[in-house]
Structures are given as structure tokens and as C-alpha cells.
Image 1 (cartoon, helix red, strand yellow):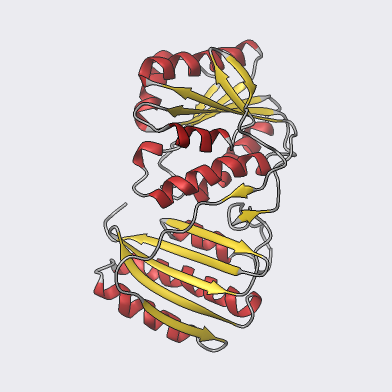
Image 2 (cartoon, rainbow, N blue to C red):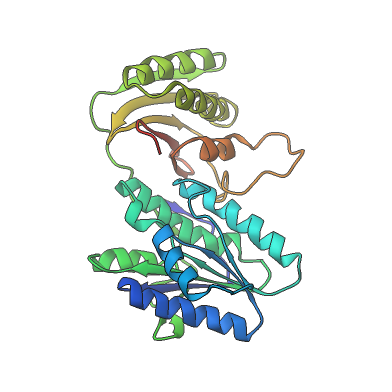
Length: 316
């Protein structure tokens, strides 16, 4: 599947920084921060805890640097855009130019699905900030023990690649090309399936409760999943032809609910940006991202929409 909405160039500079090991990480990040300080720009940093510790040791008194807790939004990449939007809006209100350093939790990705959604998040940054005020984001990526195709896939999400302190256009990035999704992984193990339509939300909740209880999904997590699932099933009925199909299964210590319908979601940012206060409707996908550990969406005209909600059986 591809999405037809393409990121546009604007005031946003999005740089991939491939590196190997702690020394190269520090060298590239500190050079980027030094450029910002010379230009009197603020710096926002959101990196894994070990990388944050390295930078804090080198920047003990850097008042122009703000560290965001990378663990706060959780592991779901669908929550990350809102975190950047909120912090950029807060600091932009103070009237100073900004730079950011954002390293996704690549090493903590527990599945191919998580890694794929992290890559999609990187591509969506170009779209989300295409019309924003001028700012730059450096995305470090540790290439140690990684395969070249993974780096190329990530380079396709970044207009610029920084090497030796210089950012050059990425040969793999094409702003005119739509995003190409990885295929959804095939379900593993026995499936439970239910067709639902108007008036069938109770049956959807009952089916999920029965199947999830058999997997020992904690009760609090089940309550969150039921809320998200009700929103997605309601969207199927309202926008997806009046009916849909629910499938559930367990895979890699994760309980998965898959919803299929005939609708089409034409906004790639749906569910990833915070709905404005007072908005009626349009909150289902946002809630799903906030409540679930991972949300996968595949949607195209003529083929319909598939949404998968992931809930890990062990504590996040």
C-alpha cells in the first residue's frame, strides 16, 4: 500500500545522522548543538536514556538545551508527533529559533511491526512540519550490526543525510514519491473472527473480552483496549460501509485486534495530531494511539481499511 499525500519542503530541515558507537554519536550531536548555540537557537533533545546520559555529561550547564523524556509517550510511535508539536509550540511562543535531536528507540523495537511504524513516523515528520516555522531536526541512527537496506529505508524518509558535519541531500529521498508501507505480517496461531454492523458493538466488546481473557491480558489493559476497539468499530459502521470484520489472535506475547472495512482514511496524520478542544468526532484514532501499545493502519481507495490494535501481555 502507498499513501498519496506527499511531504512538502518548508521551513523544516530533517537530517538523518548515521553513526557507529558512543564516540560518533557524541561527535555529531555536539557539533549540531554547537551550531545551534552559535546561532542562539534553542535545542530540544529526545533520545534514549543512555544517549541522554552521555549528552548531559557533556552539557552540564547548557541552559539553551531542553531534554524531553523519551519514555513519556511510551513505545507507540503514533504518540511522538504530538510530543514534538507541544514542545515546539511552547518554545516557539518564547520567540527563539529551534533545533531538535530525536533518536527513536530502534534498539528497543520488539518486532518488525514496531520498526516499520518507527520508519513511518520519520516520514510523517516531513509532512507534519512542512508548513511550520523554520527549525531543524537531527535524527541519529546507530548503524552498528545493521543491514544496509534498513539504512536505505530510513534514508528514504529523510531529505538530508549528515556526514562529517555536513548535511547533503539524500539520494534515496524523493519528495514526489508516496510512502510505501511494509506488508502487514501474517496472523500467527488460531484466529477468532466476527462480522459486525450497526447495533453490534456489544458483540464486538464481548468477543474481545472472551478472547483477551484467555490470554491473561490484565484487566486494566483490557478496559483500555475495549475503549479503543469500540471507537474503531464505530468508525467502521459510520464511515466504512456500515459494517466490518473483527479478527483477534495472539502473537509474540501481544494480543492483536484487527478491524477491516470498506472505508478509506485519506489523511496520513489521522490520529497522530491532538484533536482541538471542542472538536466533535474525529477522536477515535487518537484515542487508539494513546491507549494501545501499537496501532497499524493500512488504507487505500478501492481496497478498504485495515487497523490493528496491539496490546502487550506483559507490562510495558
